[in-house]
Length: 44
Image: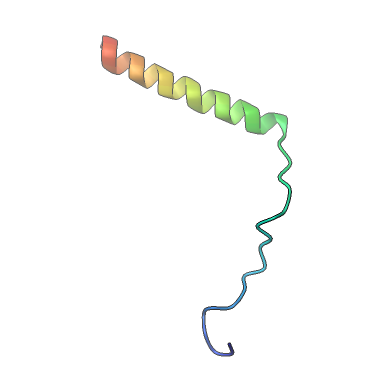
């Protein structure tokens, strides 16, 4: 496929992800923000 944009990008979709403590903190913070926004909408 020379000269086209449809070439491989080099990412491996089967690579194992490594979850660290920062990932869990980010998810917990996002959930806390969502809960706070829903509470603000219902009670505000």
